[in-house]
Length: 182
Image 1 (cartoon, rainbow, N blue to C red):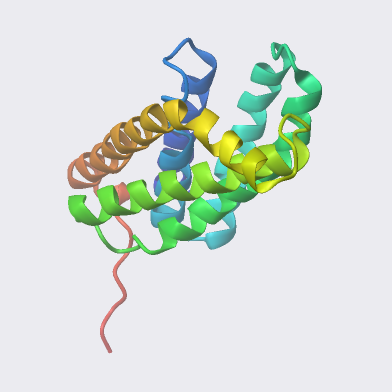
Image 2 (cartoon, rainbow, N blue to C red; image 1 turned 45 degrees about the horizontal axis):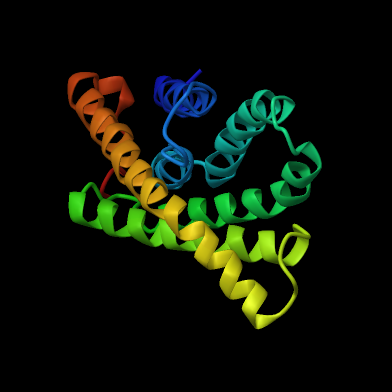
């Protein structure tokens, strides 16, 4: 098996495993995993498949402990759609290791995830009335969680992208092959 793929998949699985250990609310590697996979997996299908599989495994553990399993399962497809859109954002980082580009895309990913998932909570969660006020209340209630989501995305993006960049420098087998000029 390709050592680069194996190492990337291992990083994604390890980061996803961090979701199941105690942490501050929403300070998770979720968006960072999606960005990293989109940016670094050569095969775009694997950029979706590996992190989605890792998320599914960690969600099995998390949702078994959920006090509101029905709500969690109702929202899950929306969370996965936001996650997949974040993988697409990661495609913008292909071939780029610029810290500013990674941080900027991380902020964009956090805004996207916040916007999509909270719209989903409002639309299918049955918690808020389907009115403009209900939508505003849903987003307002989620604001305290956004800060930690953003900080988690930026922190784990630095760990994943930075850690992989260091590993690539140290281990030649992790480097993406460069096309040969004709």
